Amino acid sequence: MATETIRPNGNANTLWDIYAYTLIDDVVNSPSSAGDGTNVEADDGDEEEEQQWDFEALSTLTSASSVEVFLRHRGDGVNGDAAVNVKIGGVWQTGQTISESTYGANYSWVSKTWSGSWSDSDFDDFEVGITAPNDVGRGREYEVSVVYAVVTGEEASSATNEAFLLFLDSL
Image 1: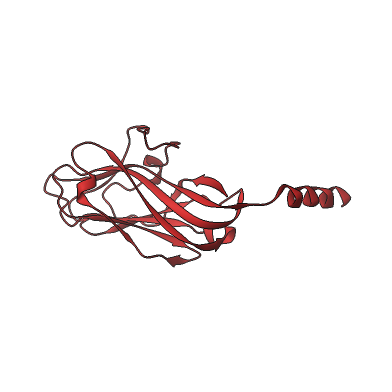
Image 2: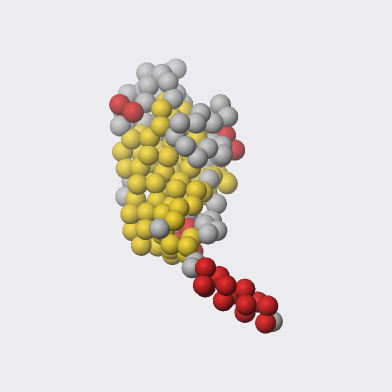
């Protein structure tokens, strides 16, 4: 099995007060890293809204068996759970709860995993959605500073790659 990390590359919707994908696309590969200090934010009027972002397509994997979404977040004074979901192959999977016990005044990392059997083309329109807690606003914000996904699956075999290169040379 191999892994590939993919990151946000577009805004699928614009619901939250601050939503730009460029604020959460930091090149961070370890949950111990802090990112660049910018963040998206759910505030007044964003209660229980799902902000969605487009992601890069897979480039090295030919199939996938799991995807783990990592996010770095905080919600000082916010009560209520958030949620995260993924769209694979044009279908939203079952969302997963992000317990309010995982965030507070300081940023912390959380990850959620989905398992299945997908082809690389199922990730051509991959999206991640994060639903804000029901208690944002009135001076309480839910902030996310980094989002990325690690996809686990199979790479094209080196024999297949070599055969393909030989085929291209013969053209």
